[in-house]
Length: 132
Image 1 (spheres, rainbow, N blue to C red):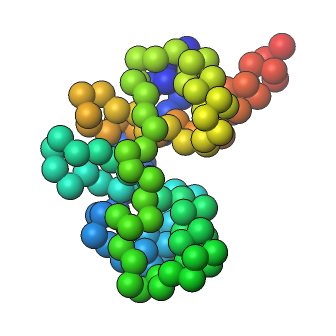
Image 2 (cartoon, rainbow, N blue to C red):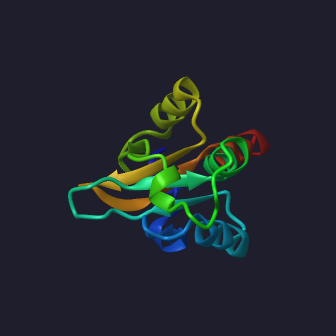
């Protein structure tokens, strides 16, 4: 099975500007009930990033950062780990486990196609188990 069959497509993702305040990213996460937001590229040849609850907790709580003074760019994981939509899911899952990450951006020609999460992969596993 390919990543494109399992991923959440771009149309359903929450994307934030790198220059947005961290508070805006947190509000978007709350509004859309998601644990991460995609950080848009600044130029066509630059990289997408990812902001998660963990990034926010680390910078605001653990490091005493000011949520109103920090921009998304300051705390984002950039570049985010990514894979092709045409990759077999098992290789993406292996990469996630080996790198201890829960989300992979799906890019083709440096353009965002979607996101693949551990939850997406577990969902497929559950369907397989239930079908037996």
